[in-house]
Length: 417
Image (tube, rainbow, N blue to C red):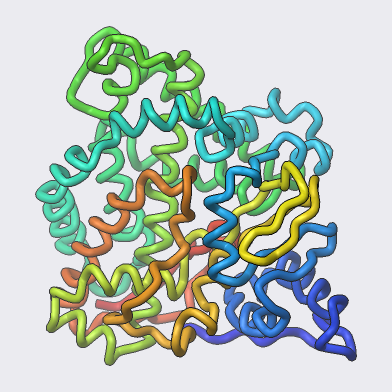
């Protein structure tokens, strides 16, 4: 069963109501692995300071739901990842394979580049294409359930192979090649949670392999297109995508990583939440029509993406009543917004039939997650099937969380069926 982490005494000052206390609380959240593993006690305390607090570097840390919801939709808050990486000492970040592949992707661009790329991938990643995957997702989930038996690691045997098979089918990654990407993508996306030299060096090595593989696959699809997303990116219906070879690789890398990395977190986080709340698990087991609202609640309760970084105010501005100075950096804490007591009744309770405001877990505005419908589809199919197939399913240890806070999930989660 999951344990709740308590805040360490050194995370606050004697005056726990002033701005310095709020800043020190943010510092503890950003730097303490134990707090990052279960940040919700910290979020509860942060909400007492209002919808936003000041971080240790002067950035505005947004924790309130309504402010976060307005901020993700305000075009005056622009992505400035280059400046962020340069402040961290990576003035050569474009020559680092992992940083270039990740931070030049769609989610880190501003218009007009973002508008152009989003239009292209939206045309390929259509609702029709996702809806058509339902029978395949049902088959993939059933096959994974057949392989679950006795004691095993839920991440290795279900939470990773289900979404990686789904996104592999969509992109056109050959089945035999998919297993190698679990470690590669985890190493590469380590730069989301940390940018220390050891992490970046490890990520660079993984990014080179991923980049070279996707370059080769794109070349194959240009020569011989198939009915997959990679073919749609390189040979669109109008014959001219406007994407360079590097843009195709970067886009495919983003879709490949995002297509299973966050869904793996959703499945593992969601399973722990359900097993920690057996009354809610019993409801989903016997009331499968709850699947849609259940997934919205699970992704709210313990989101696989907790932070959005590197948005900067282009001018003096006011967002949802909050002043933001020109040049001030912002950090959106999605996990805290999802537990805002001013928006969600009993925010720390799991209620699968909860209604009201949608979770912030997929972002919003022009950067709203393209893969959200696919992640929802997979989870809506997977959770009821898991609970029906294994009514005595349980965790056998607390599991091992992925280090860091932005990408929030499990590396290992031992279970017994």
